[in-house]
Image (cartoon, rainbow, N blue to C red):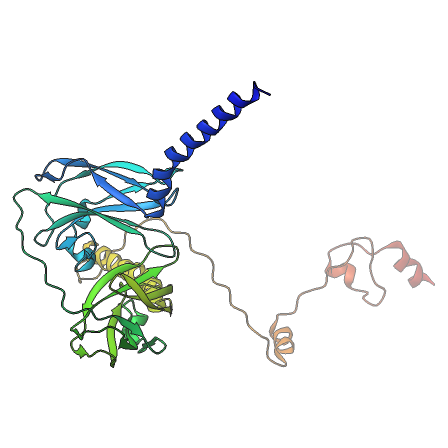
Amino acid sequence: MNRRIPALVAALALAVLLSVSLVPTVAAAADGPTVRVSRSEAGTGGSVTVTGTGWRPKTLLMMLICGRSEPGRGVIGGTNSCANADGRAVTTDTRGGFSQSLPVVEPPVPCPCVVHVATVTGASEEAADAVFQVAGHAVEPLPVQEGAGRLSVLTDTRLDGSSGLLTWFGAPPTRTLALTVGNLGTAAVKDPVFQVGTSHGVFAPQWEEQQWRGTIEPGGKARVELPVSLAGGAHGDYTVSLRYGGKVLAEQPWGVGRPWGVTLFWVLAGVVVPAALFRVGMAVVDRVRPRGPGGQPSVRRGRTLRMPELTLRMPRPGAREDRDRDRPATASSTLPWFTPDADPGAGTDAGTPTTNTTKTKGNT
């Protein structure tokens, strides 16, 4: 019994140590995805190492340097405020972590800047920001948020509008996102800035900021209409999302038809262009062909094989009788050993002596 007590104490101590060591990991996972940078400031042409934890395993992420941003408020202006051409993609490991080098470039808008990391695939977007300063880049203060208003959707969201003839030929599809929002806060909301996102398939939404002009008093409501557009030639099943204050307010599906006019154009081009090239080639050959004295293309003389001409003539009625009548009469040929009795002078005419048979008949 005494031997079992030290073993139990050791087991309890090991369990306590394991629980203490696991607490920070669980807390970090509960807080959501995080991002850290190796340096808080760097100049263009250099690089910074970005490290992340708490993300979904085996998830594709995009890292960007964005201006007009700060943690907690997100990227004001969406991806239009980021250096999109110099971003880097990274995939998390089985534990949801990553470490990737990111080149330092100047964003298209002034700082404050952040290293913005967001998911590329998935039904919902996850994002995290880390404060970063681009050395030598302009800095401007962010607009101050006024009031403590809280907007919520009161009615169903719908997409108004239809596709025209130009959309059938590949023009960007456009719609108007219409919904009624109410202010559930204690302060008025003036000129709220919404984020409209469009997603296709498994890809996460691409957000774009749009400002609605107007004021919504506490307890009041307003009809909000925001334009939505896709890239030229887009087709398939899309989802339009509306976000305000970091919270998704509404989602609306959007089915976009295939631009068959583009397919028809390429089919016609595949038929018309070869025919036109053939006509042009024949015209060039006809122009460079040598000419004769009269201006006509000269024909090379040589031996040719000419087929005999065949003429089919139908005989007219009575033509055969006329042909036999016009034919000259010819003496019938007789066999040399036969002389008919009806012609007694046949032997004389032929210049041959009479036969013995004739003489016998005369004597008789």
